[in-house]
Image (cartoon, rainbow, N blue to C red):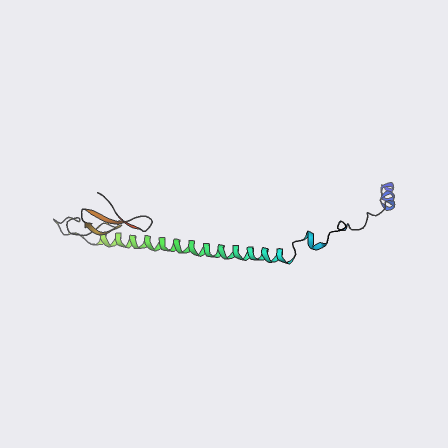
Length: 122
Protein backbone atom coordinates (compact mmCIF):
# COMPACT_ATOMS: atom_id res chain seq x y z
CA UNK A 1 0.00 0.00 0.00
CA UNK A 2 2.86 2.31 0.83
CA UNK A 3 4.39 1.73 -2.62
CA UNK A 4 1.08 2.70 -4.28
CA UNK A 5 1.02 6.04 -2.45
CA UNK A 6 4.62 6.76 -3.47
CA UNK A 7 3.83 5.90 -7.09
CA UNK A 8 0.82 8.22 -7.10
CA UNK A 9 2.84 11.02 -5.50
CA UNK A 10 5.65 10.81 -8.05
CA UNK A 11 3.40 10.58 -11.13
CA UNK A 12 3.46 13.87 -13.04
CA UNK A 13 0.23 15.90 -13.20
CA UNK A 14 -1.76 15.74 -16.42
CA UNK A 15 -1.23 18.43 -19.03
CA UNK A 16 -3.10 21.71 -18.51
CA UNK A 17 -6.75 22.08 -19.52
CA UNK A 18 -7.07 21.35 -23.22
CA UNK A 19 -7.67 24.37 -25.41
CA UNK A 20 -9.28 24.76 -28.81
CA UNK A 21 -7.49 23.69 -31.94
CA UNK A 22 -5.51 26.53 -33.51
CA UNK A 23 -7.67 28.59 -35.87
CA UNK A 24 -10.96 27.98 -34.00
CA UNK A 25 -12.68 30.49 -31.75
CA UNK A 26 -15.21 29.79 -29.03
CA UNK A 27 -17.99 31.32 -31.16
CA UNK A 28 -17.41 28.69 -33.84
CA UNK A 29 -18.01 25.73 -31.51
CA UNK A 30 -20.78 27.04 -29.21
CA UNK A 31 -24.34 27.97 -30.16
CA UNK A 32 -23.88 31.58 -29.07
CA UNK A 33 -26.61 34.15 -28.62
CA UNK A 34 -28.68 33.06 -31.65
CA UNK A 35 -28.70 29.49 -30.41
CA UNK A 36 -29.95 30.65 -27.02
CA UNK A 37 -32.65 32.83 -28.59
CA UNK A 38 -33.89 30.01 -30.84
CA UNK A 39 -33.92 27.51 -27.97
CA UNK A 40 -35.85 29.97 -25.78
CA UNK A 41 -38.33 30.55 -28.64
CA UNK A 42 -38.98 26.82 -29.07
CA UNK A 43 -39.43 26.35 -25.31
CA UNK A 44 -41.90 29.25 -25.16
CA UNK A 45 -43.83 28.05 -28.24
CA UNK A 46 -44.03 24.50 -26.87
CA UNK A 47 -45.23 25.77 -23.49
CA UNK A 48 -47.95 27.88 -25.10
CA UNK A 49 -49.08 24.93 -27.26
CA UNK A 50 -49.29 22.64 -24.23
CA UNK A 51 -51.32 25.20 -22.25
CA UNK A 52 -53.70 25.66 -25.20
CA UNK A 53 -54.08 21.88 -25.65
CA UNK A 54 -54.88 21.37 -21.96
CA UNK A 55 -57.47 24.16 -22.12
CA UNK A 56 -59.15 22.62 -25.17
CA UNK A 57 -59.19 19.13 -23.65
CA UNK A 58 -60.71 20.51 -20.46
CA UNK A 59 -63.40 22.29 -22.51
CA UNK A 60 -64.27 19.09 -24.42
CA UNK A 61 -64.54 17.11 -21.16
CA UNK A 62 -66.74 19.78 -19.62
CA UNK A 63 -69.04 19.82 -22.64
CA UNK A 64 -69.33 16.02 -22.54
CA UNK A 65 -70.17 16.17 -18.83
CA UNK A 66 -72.84 18.83 -19.40
CA UNK A 67 -74.32 16.78 -22.25
CA UNK A 68 -74.47 13.65 -20.07
CA UNK A 69 -76.20 15.60 -17.30
CA UNK A 70 -78.66 17.06 -19.81
CA UNK A 71 -79.51 13.63 -21.19
CA UNK A 72 -79.88 12.22 -17.67
CA UNK A 73 -82.24 15.08 -16.79
CA UNK A 74 -84.30 14.42 -19.94
CA UNK A 75 -84.49 10.72 -19.10
CA UNK A 76 -85.57 11.49 -15.53
CA UNK A 77 -88.12 13.99 -16.81
CA UNK A 78 -89.59 11.45 -19.22
CA UNK A 79 -89.80 8.81 -16.48
CA UNK A 80 -91.58 11.22 -14.13
CA UNK A 81 -94.29 12.06 -16.69
CA UNK A 82 -96.89 9.28 -16.77
CA UNK A 83 -98.47 8.79 -20.16
CA UNK A 84 -102.24 8.88 -20.50
CA UNK A 85 -103.75 5.46 -21.15
CA UNK A 86 -104.43 4.75 -24.80
CA UNK A 87 -101.83 7.15 -26.23
CA UNK A 88 -98.67 6.17 -28.00
CA UNK A 89 -95.43 8.11 -27.57
CA UNK A 90 -94.78 8.23 -31.34
CA UNK A 91 -98.28 9.45 -32.21
CA UNK A 92 -98.47 12.10 -29.51
CA UNK A 93 -95.34 13.91 -30.74
CA UNK A 94 -93.25 13.21 -27.63
CA UNK A 95 -89.80 11.85 -28.13
CA UNK A 96 -87.36 9.49 -26.53
CA UNK A 97 -84.29 10.78 -24.68
CA UNK A 98 -81.47 11.44 -27.12
CA UNK A 99 -83.80 12.40 -29.99
CA UNK A 100 -85.04 15.82 -30.96
CA UNK A 101 -88.40 16.81 -32.23
CA UNK A 102 -90.09 13.42 -32.40
CA UNK A 103 -91.04 12.30 -35.90
CA UNK A 104 -90.51 14.60 -38.82
CA UNK A 105 -91.14 13.45 -42.35
CA UNK A 106 -90.98 9.72 -41.60
CA UNK A 107 -87.64 9.85 -39.83
CA UNK A 108 -86.60 11.18 -36.47
CA UNK A 109 -84.00 13.86 -35.89
CA UNK A 110 -81.43 12.59 -33.40
CA UNK A 111 -78.23 13.76 -31.75
CA UNK A 112 -75.16 11.80 -32.72
CA UNK A 113 -72.48 10.91 -30.18
CA UNK A 114 -70.23 13.70 -31.46
CA UNK A 115 -72.90 16.35 -30.90
CA UNK A 116 -73.85 16.76 -34.56
CA UNK A 117 -77.48 16.47 -35.49
CA UNK A 118 -78.40 14.11 -38.27
CA UNK A 119 -81.37 12.31 -39.70
CA UNK A 120 -81.80 8.70 -38.72
CA UNK A 121 -83.72 6.05 -40.59
CA UNK A 122 -86.13 3.66 -38.98
